[in-house]
Image (tube, rainbow, N blue to C red):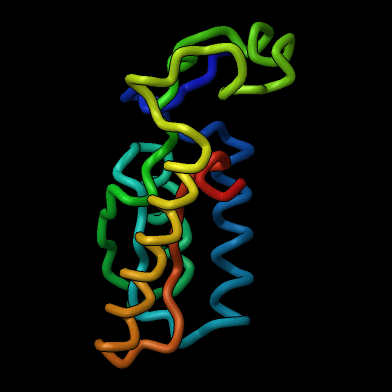
Length: 139
């Protein structure tokens, strides 16, 4: 197993698919007014968004890809999970981040993107939207 980061071609694990369906079923009950879903453009986030959207049948909310909620850009993508665990998942310690995102940059990007998404939703008259992203963006 590896730390995916922004590497292409990684779909959800069956457990992740089941979690996405469960989340979608919850969202349909808790927020039936959802009219749009935003997602990171990475395959696994788009798959999550699609599985959530499918729970809203027959009126599937449209999907909008948003690069602002993209996974962290890290020098560790593609590295073994065992190596990451040995580092205690510290992506920002003891590395040259001059070509990569810092924690502060990720937070700023995520906050700016969520403000943009919220503003667009309100402008469109939506009271609820769904955003699918990645763990580091949420941290």
